[in-house]
Image (cartoon, rainbow, N blue to C red):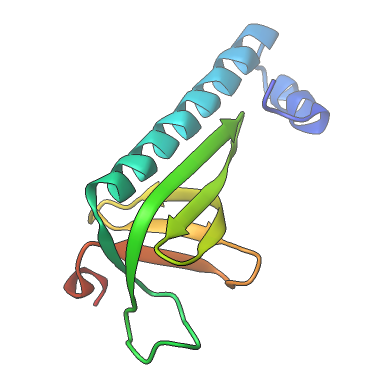
Length: 125
């Protein structure tokens, strides 16, 4: 089950049954799997993306990245993976496609904070 023992106890205290907890846990896992598929589809669709990432070797406000692939895996509420660019890669934790069509990921451990990606620089302005 997705919820840890304290969360389960708190949810039971507010009236959820074991069956309802299981249904909620399954819904969370399904939403995470859907998010992973959406993220992979975004990077599969675009050979080149632009980001809000600060890079020491780039003076561009929104650096350009050639994308090879994004490989994700999920477990309950966890979404992790590896984003491979042309000459380097970075681990991914969490992420989502935003309503405006851009993508937001947590990259780590060398990148602080969330990074947005878009097919054009204009979409990041």
